[in-house]
Length: 463
Image (tube, rainbow, N blue to C red; front, side, top):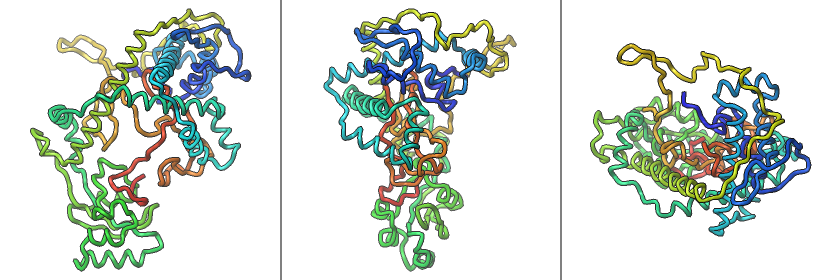
């Protein structure tokens, strides 16, 4: 298996504490309540200091989140993931360096975070918790004060503006590029179903049944009924159309009912968290054996692939810019001091042979070889409409609040920025969002847009 970066590995096991402390540390702020370790300066970026204790605290926070505070568990984790204390320190420092470069780049472009936007987003997140104590506990669980969290959001917003700025000259992908990508993904679209629905309030079962019977008998056209009766005002204007299931994230009840329908079939009444649906399957896609032209794909699939490629190109432009900033910057990384609390002697923690990190195979001559398990896009991994699929070195920045995690026992289950109920019944935990290989974007909580289908009304059948 391909070894992920330290920050991304942490997210894989449910941690995202790398950038949380990093945002504050890179800003040069200090907190008297933070422990003192070795002191000194870990690195400088164009003269701006990154304190050694900031790096140490970030790593200690990671260990606490992992439950690897004792030397034995920490040493074993490092060994199994091909890390050493030195390489952990290096990656964390590099993430702080990149964050500082983002700050300096934003300042040079006169990019700032709007205070009202920061306040609005923090208020939305705060609204997921039913008391001040629960909110404070959620912040504390990821090693943040509310001021630090606000700094994190501000950096996130500046990063988004900076990305837009440096990618403003990125053009749309060519038809040839779209076709090449579509050929890789087309098999994953086979069996996709397009549907329309009529949504009623949960209390309107009698009306829903009456409309269903009229539609089934042919007395009432489905699209006309959607325009007249559906509470999903966005899709109602389009005859109830909510698009293709493989480009959307429908609630479970809707997905289950749609799966039972063939083209032109209409469901019985389908209750969900949004009310009562009547669903019509309007189309079913079967992938061609050989895709030779974009005309063989529904336009919605073409648009989804175009959006994926454009997002990838924009991200690549941003990371090219960041690499240029790195190359032009005066960056000094000082030697690792002695006496760090996360240091262990890795000679005591050899990596076990059954870690599964690599696969042993044989070559054409029968000789044993190590097979690289690096991930490649699987055939079943189709891009969702407007979504960001990994390409160009995992440098894709997701649109939603990627760093969010449900906090234990807190929250009311609401989405901070989408008027739709969540399935997990838990509030979003304010995390740092350290999800990228370089942690370069410094993104914390991104303003979440919610996963929506093609309808834009209040009652979409989406999660």
